[in-house]
View 1: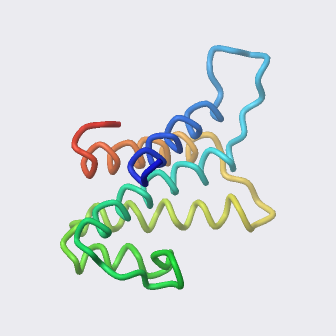
View 2 (view 1 turned 120 degrees about the horizontal axis):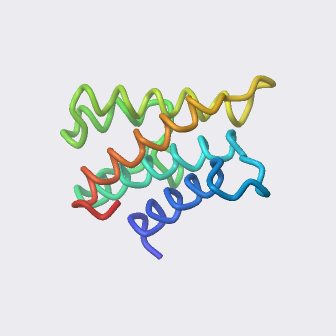
Length: 125
């Protein structure tokens, strides 16, 4: 499975973790936000790898600098870089803070990730 396929898988997971029509399933907002970020990250990483950009970590693109690097490489414009930074900041809260993200933040994260994946992976979101 390549990174673009993993981006799609993460989008699907993020959506499934949000509340839906099935009232028997409790939402997993933090996990959804984390998957939304990784969907976007993997979409950007797909483009970076296609440009033969070297990893900035040992075997990955460093998360903290990736939005700015992707902007400098011409993969993201200023607006899309800001979206990736917002997704990253929400993932940090979702994964590492005692506070949880709320439903609006989780819904917004999924929407932002879908936008980025759709734009970067030729409409395959």
